[in-house]
Amino acid sequence: MDADYGIPRELSDLQKLRSRYHPELPPCLQGTTVRVELRDATTAADPSGEHTIKRFFPHTYGQPLAHFLRATAKVPDAQIITEHPAIRVGVLFCGRQSPGGHNVIWGLHDALKIHNPKNILLGFLGGSEGLFAQKTLEITDDVLATYKNQGGYDMLGRTKDQIRTTEQVNAAMAVCKALKLDGLVIIGGVTSNTDAAHLAEKFAETKCLTKVVGVPVTLNGDLKNQFVEANVGFDTICKVNSQLISNVCTDALSAEKYYYFIRLMGRKASHVALECTLQSHPNMVILGEEVAASKLTIFDITQQICDAVQARAEHDKNHGVILLPEGLIESIPEVYALLQEIHGLLRQGVSADKISSQLSPWASALFEFLPHFIRKQLLLHPESDDSAQLSQIETEKLIAHLVETEMNKRLKEGTYKGKKFNAICHFFGYQARGSLPSKFDCDYAYVLGHVCYHILAAGLNGYMATITNLKNPANKWHCGAAPISAMMTVKRYGRGPGKASIGVPALHPATVDLRGKSYELLSQNATKFLLDDVYRNPGPLQFDGPGADAKAISLCVEDQDYIGRIKKLQEYLDKVRTIVKPGCSQDVLKAALSAMASVTDILSVISSPSNVSTPF
Image (cartoon, rainbow, N blue to C red; front, side):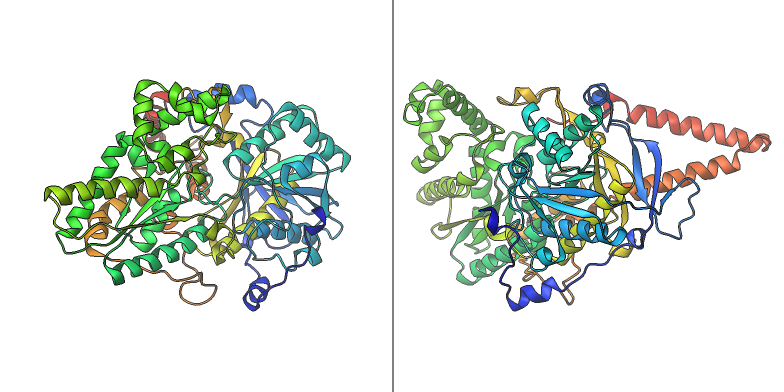
């Protein structure tokens, strides 16, 4: 019921302690003056999609990247905003709950009140459905009191959210006009921020005064691009899961007779599984991206794990821990094709009990091969995005069943000399996403909330709040904003029935980069993890002490800081302009021309459409 939203929570002593913690603001967000530097116009990462993105976003594509500056910064072209008339801002949660979401609202509320106590923040109750129905709760200090640094989305709630159809967009616009909102902040992941971009474009086209801002909050960690280093919630999810995995590893080492198969969240990408592996050092992880890239069949995966079990047995080790991402099942080519046939028949109205008789011969053979419990789960109706109900498909039990069958066969044939194979299966999903947020997620989310206000104060529309240099302390973070349209790509082909998305600009989930530093670190340690039992327990979430400031390993090794590098490039270009002026010597001019010619030739080659990877 709506009356349950925003009511004071009953807090434990630890929760009370956490509610009193106040995150640090970077210097660029301190004070009551907003200093914003707008430099060069942004462009699409994939040049081949630029024309399409421009066509869909004529009003919001090509906007400049924004940097927010500290008071001492000497930037002559910076816009300094000292007047802050009272504004009204709406905020809503979209998509699945992610630890730290409440702190985005807290940070936004604090920024609004710091710059003008008359500012109003309205939270929409129940996500996008609450937006359409104009159900609001005014966010105050009293409302926030028991939600600061707490998990969940229960202060405002959320639904199965989308703002996509013409009717939904028009309903959102009508509400923004009725409430006289100057800003609308949408907190969510890939899909929600894509919707935010389309909403911002529609508002700009119709001259609606409401500015739309997106915030990268998703536990899957798949809203990553050149502007976004991390998502709120991912750090917490991985730390909580890593402790659980480590506990299981210790149990495996103690009993010495079980293999644990653990399925983790991660629908389209395996970022959670990769990060948890780097933190807790289980014996093995099967990433969906590896399977898709190598086109591994379910039999290949089974053989790979069985070979690992056999290799460990030769070292007198008859136990182990294996991680699997939630989306693995859709990465297996033949299982994915089977799912598409099933989903096609379900959309045609064929009842689940008649599906097996109408499958193609090869699909029918695969379906009948699979254990009964998996068959029932594959017959579930697909999600709204045409993907399978991954949380309901027990991939870990399927893989464990196939491995056990093969190991028993090898044992009978005498090719396997170890002990009888015993599997125990777990799904670590909801245990982590309702957790108290980590210190990093508390800080990151709170600062992003402040960035949202700065974006609105600068009059920007269709932007996402961004912070880079996150691996360093908060006082060195680079705060800014990037147009959401600049993060978009265009699918030119794809799998399955989602043909409506082909040719339409969108934010797409970033998959694990198999050439990236995080995956390289995993590859370097894979053999050691498999055979040496170097299990590592990072412990429970720590809010103080030596582990409190630990950050995701993948965040630290990738070292992205895109905004910082853009700033450094701009400094170099400015320096060239100050050195190479009319009247400079011939030698200086010749050197500059030669260097610039080489640089532009190289950049032209590597930025051409044929050399830019495109999403699948």
